[in-house]
Length: 212
Image (cartoon, rainbow, N blue to C red):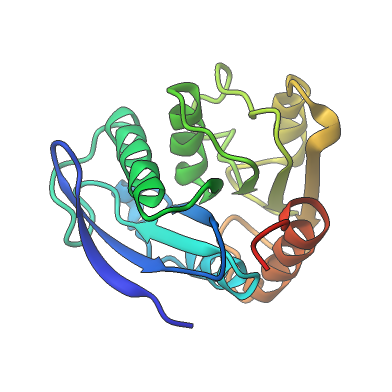
């Protein structure tokens, strides 16, 4: 696996990123957990997601939100970070990718869905532990695209019942696939391989078309 370190200039900030070209015209944009709690693109879950997408032939772009690592700027309570996502999606389009997919963990899920509400177009979503018990998800909805949602059986910020209540409002519930990892909390320590297996199966069965 080979990622290229980049500093990508957006209209108002320059963001640190890691980019892998992949084998086709499809790429995954990956969003990391909460910046105020140590979240970054080097998080264990984000790395597991990136490796799974790359092994499946997709291009990947993971990056640090503004104010994290070498990225310029300051924490923006989700709204500025959603602009970061839109800017990174534009970068991938400029690299020639015709189809984009979204993948995110925890706070990154919240930001990714805010970006979707602002016009981000993705053909699928992999969402690890949406923190529905920690951040306001009431006005956020999944796009009507194939989606995998994962959570641990002991997730502190994404209880099974809370997640189901939120998913009850999905516009296309038949496109949503939920996987619960036993003996797993919000942080997926030593459960990364199991997560990767769920994601790889989802990509193979519901997503991967030209990225092979």
